[in-house]
Amino acid sequence: MIHLVRVEIREAGVVRAGRRILGGASLVLEPGTLTAVVGSDATTLLDLAAGLAPAEGFVRFDGVDVRRLGEDVLASSVAVVTSRPFVTAGSLRENVTLGATGDEADLAEALRIAALAPADDPAGHRLQVGIARAVLRRPRLLVLDAPGIDPGILENLAGTAITVLAATDRPGPFADRIVVLANGRVITLSRHDAEYERITRAEPIAAAVH
Image (cartoon, rainbow, N blue to C red; front, side, top):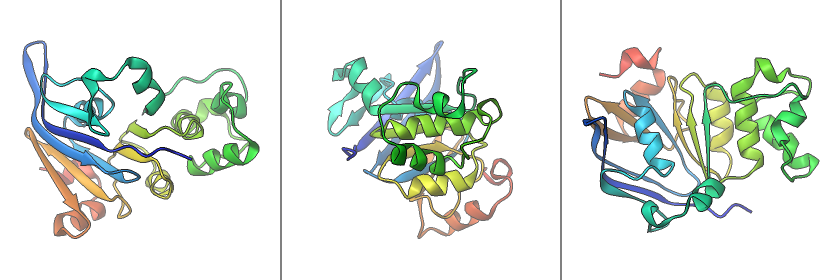
């Protein structure tokens, strides 16, 4: 059973090489929800959710500031998947498990969520392999920095108990919330907002966000 996590980002700012990348960002990831992020600086917000200590403001996991959490705690709680995860020359099963414990049912479920078939070539499905690998380990928080992800996979993830934060070009109507990042602003939309529906219908999302 997954111990759910609540991530709270409050008035957080990120400065790199003397330049402010993000400022005043506030977002709460409720346990077991899927939040889709669109727009510029998505990676920076995802980094904060994954445990990056902000230059200002705070990030808390279940009420504990990330500055007080050890790297081992974050590593065991958070799985981060980027657009091109590493794969080995082994089989799909070997690439997904990488020595992880779990029964056949767990593996089959991870493959289903990642839209993988047992005979698929890992080299041709890197992102899906990374997602299945992460799901198999049952993280408390899954951060997906892969804007081109198939919306069907996001829909599958929405049916799990994992807290998910995903950068995406095509958020579907199954996201609990959509976060729009543009011009340094963070706008959070729920399913009840008219803009939520507009964004889920837009193609491509990059052209729809201003």
